[in-house]
Image 1 (cartoon, protein in one colour):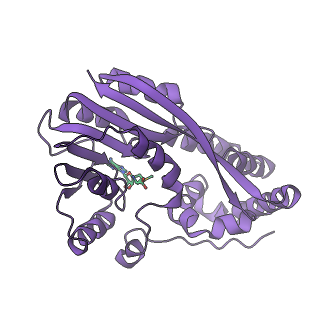
Image 2 (image 1 turned 30 degrees about the vertical axis):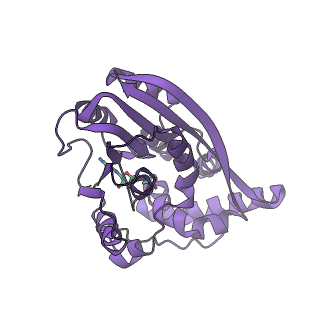
Image 3 (image 1 turned 60 degrees about the horizontal axis):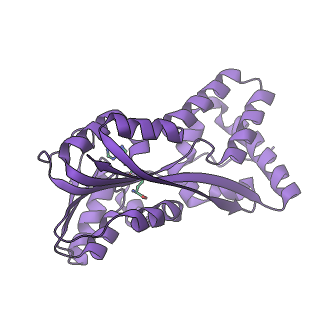
Length: 278
Ligand SMILES: C[S@@+](CC[C@H](N)C(=O)[O-])C[C@H]1O[C@@H](n2cnc3c(N)ncnc32)[C@H](O)[C@@H]1O
């Protein structure tokens, strides 16, 4: 069985966050769709929900220029501080970033002309509450563009995780794995319904997918972006003292698959949803 290096990064460590990419490669395929979908107009108040280390917040501020004011909100304090440093060093004047949650936003009613969220609203605790807040702070006609990843994200990985759990007799954990998937990766129709229920009119939905290719399971588990953003929820499916055994077997399985196929290719289906406040 493979030895599994059971450690992860501390996302609250400022030196770690200072070297995180503003636009992780993972976020880029979503972000390019989002940047193509928004309407570029002058004099807008713009909101980015779940701006992470600064995307698309800072890119939008640059693309829209100084007639527009761009606001970001995220509860990840260290990332918010990193954005503030970048604003100072780059002398960016049209951005404000708020440390907080989008379920409760410190903005007046009908303030924003454009609201975006790149893989953000699917990662909040209460998406219905966030969309209700979006409706409150949106002006009539406000464009809301969100990108989300879909339930079959990395299906190849999850199939092998499930097979590993079944083989080790961990059926409760299979149920937990399915809960983990449905908590963060809602079917597209469910996200569309949430937007409509919150009062937004759907204008267009673009679906696409991309592949993340790795040499094998060992490389996957050691990749910094995977360690940073994925490993903790994957491990959270298990009892702490089962992690090394289950992940050892899982890496074996992923490696055999990669060996047979010549690579470990994980599919990421996504959607970019364009909507308006009526
Ligand atoms: C997948 S990351 C996306 C970050 C960035 N937009 C990007 O494209 O790379 C999701 C972000 O949502 C943030 N988030 C989680 N809960 C939130 C909430 N309740 N309100 C606002 N943002 C939240 C996380 O801290 C994280 O930065």
